[in-house]
Image 1 (cartoon, rainbow, N blue to C red):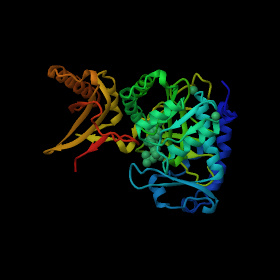
Image 2 (cartoon, rainbow, N blue to C red):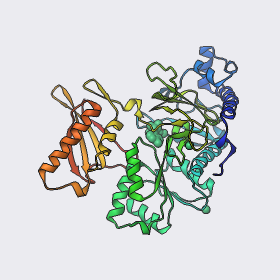
Image 3 (cartoon, protein in one colour):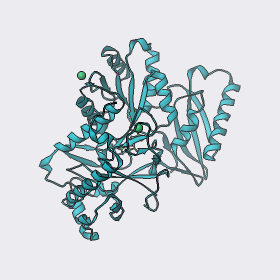
Image 4 (cartoon, rainbow, N blue to C red):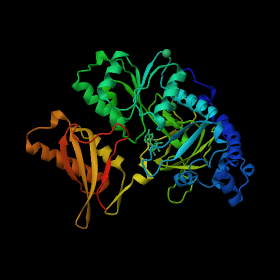
Length: 430
Ligand code: ADP
Ligand code: K
Ligand code: ZN
């Protein structure tokens, strides 16, 4: 397959070399910002003393709180008049943080995004519909610019309004979509209800990301639409989407190491972990001009997949994001990630597309209740069958999370759904 750019198939030594020079440039730039200038001075760090990527552990982390404390513009390396765009994170966890982009930043971001899409076979002949929210959220314009750069006819559909989404898909014979996984499943049920049979659509690829999801969810999306779905990872602090992306092998996401220097660290100690071990992803930008970030703690939990990918690219692969360090549920002293629950639920064929974990307090005891949608064909009158499904779910969950949860079986499409990132946990404990 043709490469989108030379960097895509760089050898390991070429990647190491480019990381080294770009890290030096990044540190030099960062030192010009009020925030890093001050921090380096305070800690006696001389950027020029960091001469290779391995030295990076001598630099302090940057956290979301640092971004907030530098609000609105203390991390800029140049006057704000040199910036051409800003985005803000939706603030899923706490107040919003702002990222500024120079013209070159927008340009290299569009190239990274185009590289991702090209890698999975998307070309100028494709018609692309972006079902992500636009506005401050980076999944809108970020992916949009990538698709346009490839030359795709690009439809900025935005989020929600399922009927209109389906009409656009049919009328313009859209071949590629970008869609949040939980919404993809919802749209799939609307598609079937409205009778959009496969012959009416021309869809072949979906880019899915923006929220944690299991392999089983991906398989369901592929089945529901009869397409291939590729995992897309990014965060506003690192431009947005385009940071790491699955190749045709669908076995981990290549993180573009010419643009991002990635580490996996122990979330407690901050020590780097070896390939294969799960920890928090920490990223340093290597190309960004306006607002470089050094050793940024993403809070996302993943690991490097050891070994080389069959596709021949040497950019290391990140495993599916298991959740955010701050997503962890602590119940009766047990640590649980919502993705563990999802994994169990989605392995049970009767379980439908949506679920909700509710944490409640019963007297002095914390309890977990899981509301589970049941596929229409299995939602039967026979109480015994439902009871048996209920206890099967409960015991499979107990095996995985060591907690006995109350299981409420509900009808398909009865749980609240969001057009953006799905809310998987409702914590009603005070
Ligand atoms: P917010 O913090 O407001 O959600 P972003 O829109 O920047 O801001 O979201 C980035 C976050 O979304 C990532 O840090 C990660 O937790 C999640 N995310 C993005 N892509 C994926 C993906 N492919 N798989 C799992 N989680 C993802
Ligand atoms: K075109
Ligand atoms: Zn690959």
